[in-house]
Length: 294
Image (cartoon, rainbow, N blue to C red; front, side, top):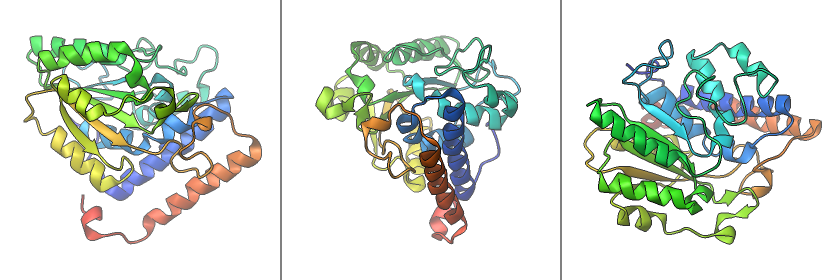
């Protein structure tokens, strides 16, 4: 069972806009938030949850659901609005984000958040968790898939490569890793802190298939890439290396690490929301027939 009816690209764009707007609003509630790393994955998350992940919002613990783990757990602020929109929990719960007794924290707690499959924290753990899930699903002969979202800065963690080695050795074809290559991390550019490229050669050396998503904000590329990866014909784990833009959608946040974590003052908040709204207003403009027909 899919999460929802298959949405056209115009609707998917609107959902991604909703995600970014909610990230702004929820960060306002919390007083601090990870804008850059949440905005860079808005389209990817939207495509996953509204097109490709097999879930049952009314039955969050459905045994044969696809699993999604967020290695870069600080970006879970971009997932909560989607979970609420799909019906995993009431949208009103979003208003409590990070407040006392709220189930929604900066990082997800799987014991409290319906739809969250693992509690993230220190960066680098979730590929290991995802490998364990994929192995367990194979033992159960389930056709569910495990999708692990990671950051490119996260690739410097040694535990990532221990997990990658085991996944490749065991040929876990039900495991999909998505690396958000937005090229920045908390305190500088990834290439400056510790350059882990070429990631494609590294994952192939560990026995993975590798697919390059050249523009992680282009709907045609995203949907074509995911259709290729989720077609059920692979015999190895696959790593999708997605080139994205940190802070995508807000001009003064784009490409810079300084907005990995921050808080907008009133004027900048209005400016950011106005930019997002202007983009949303353009969604109704005619687009190519091939793009609208997906």
